[in-house]
Length: 250
Image 1 (tube, rainbow, N blue to C red):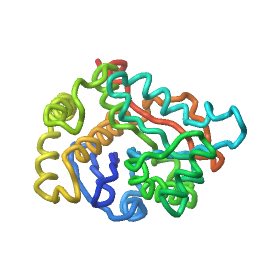
Image 2 (image 1 turned 180 degrees about the vertical axis):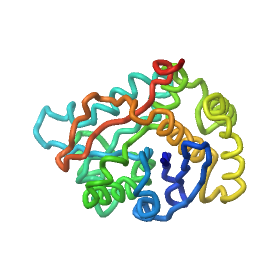
Image 3 (image 1 turned 135 degrees about the vertical axis):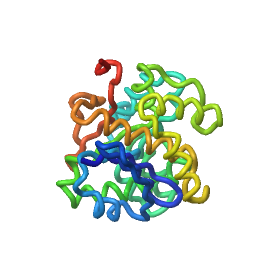
Image 4 (image 1 turned 90 degrees about the horizontal axis):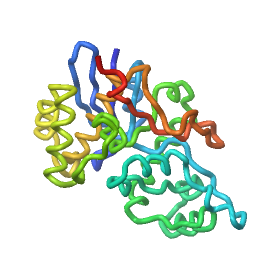
């Protein structure tokens, strides 16, 4: 039985695989479909990418509801780390041919702009959206996480103190993961040795590892926001899952 944590990175998709016997593997895939081809038999694949997209509305006065409920709730829970949850573009903007076109569509349909940092990951959002549109079996296994929400839940429902992009933030997150999965430091160090920083960064590894640990220890006991998830027009769930470790400790 395999459990995957996946994070989009400069090199493609970083996948950390944990097994029940505590063995592990790290792979880097150029395309999400390649990852699925190798791990379609996994029990759970938790990925840090928006799954399920709003369509947007041009109806005057309706913009306030044109954001996913899971994103709003995650910000409320994360407190000082709330800025890590970005506003997900609506589907027409995700499929826009250019940044300018995406800005125009998102403003028209949601009343908000798309920041360049968000546009930089739109290709990955689109890739997973297209993949799940034609792979209905994968929808049962591939689920969305937000790393900071998973760290929050593993930390006793408390946001972490430092930003994940800073060295003290890396140490804080690694210490938490090690307390749950002692091999975490070994996985981090070996992955750093195996890949260039232009492909995989340290925070990519920690995010993917947090997702993998959440999948392994959470198994069938994952919580989600909202509960139940709200489906988009393509019947994809707009949700984020996490594991409340404090409720399942002996």
